[in-house]
Image 1 (cartoon, rainbow, N blue to C red):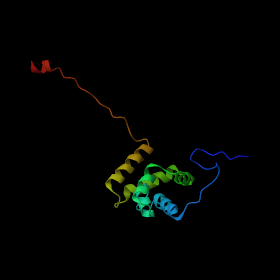
Image 2: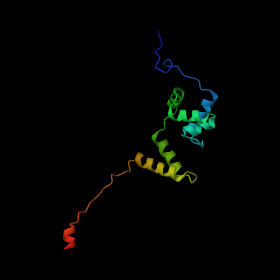
Image 3: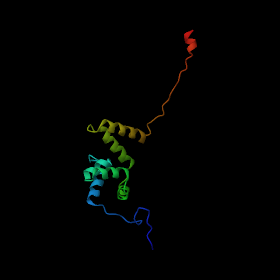
Image 4: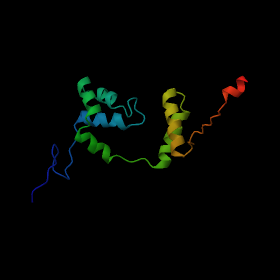
Length: 129
């Protein structure tokens, strides 16, 4: 039987071993305690990639990275709420990160309400008379 190969890919069902630098990148990128957590560019630099390669990883997610990220644990809703609460309560987090976490927490809990705009029409002629 012939293995089907996607264009630019490898045979379906095969996994690729990560080299040491790739492993380091994934650890830095996915570890919530890392200074470069979820920042592809900074994680790549910290793992030892050149600036050009770090930019490429940021823009053109290679197959090995997509595969590895797809294998990682998915957050359950209660985990997400707990993590957002930690960010909000952490005095060392930037204000921008805290505001974004508040925004996300409001969305998760369906606490946004549509803005209500009321317009009052004034008859200028009657005011001038």
